[in-house]
Amino acid sequence: MRQIVLDTETTGLEPSQDHRIIEIGCVELVNRRLTGRHFHRYLNPERDIDAGAAAVHGMRLADLEGKPRFAQVAAEFLEFISGAELIIHNAPFDLAFLDAELKRVPGEARRVRELCLILDTLELARRMHPGQRNSLDALCKRYAVDNSSRELHGALLDARILSDVYLAMTGGQATLTLDSSGDGTGSGGGMGAARMRARPGGLRVIPASAEELAAHERSLDAIDKASAGMTVWRQTKV
Image 1 (cartoon, rainbow, N blue to C red):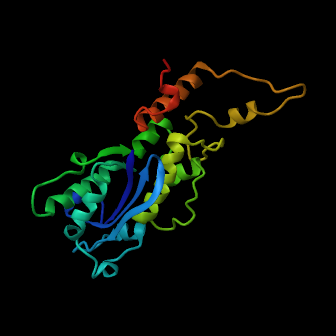
Image 2: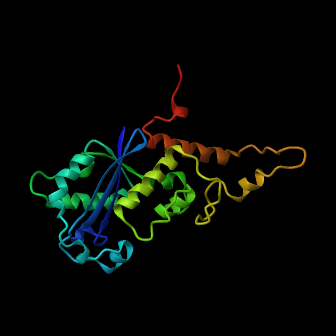
Image 3: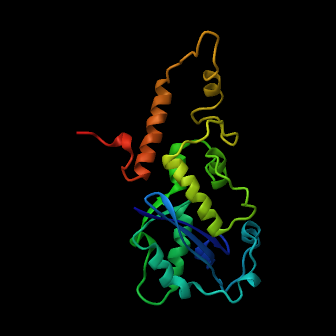
């Protein structure tokens, strides 16, 4: 199973207003392991960068002088991602920009969804953690993924961080702490900590409630869907 974790940085928020991609970062996973292969390019957008976008990623148009245009790297980019499952946080945003860039490239019009499967980790996180914050930074905190180097957004850095988050979400064990950024509607939290305290004479065991069991099953379903049905607990032994 080949997966590509992808992120982009842009000149603004709306491709419909001719905003452009200025950075693409991708890292490759094969059978849920990082291979060390990646695709990373800075791009000349041929237009100004909005102040709000520059505040997020720290890049100015002057920084991109001499960098290639998207059309110059399109073939190499498509070769790298074709046939893989793309893992993207807030996929509609990145896909809209990528499709807009591909539309500008001479030749047959192409769309990323025609070349790859798409897994949106933001959508997955919302199913697994309803009512909680599910930004990349919030997920890093929830799953104890180190993002201390993320002072500004960067496509390759964010793709690498997202790969760690994705692997933790779909196969790892989250730390058993209450996410202080949540609104308290998610499962777990202070009650769980109280239940784990030992009492004189032995540990008191309190069974999970029906609501907790249902939330657990929803999380297992989401993980199973993200792994294309490869989870052991959903496989039936004959």
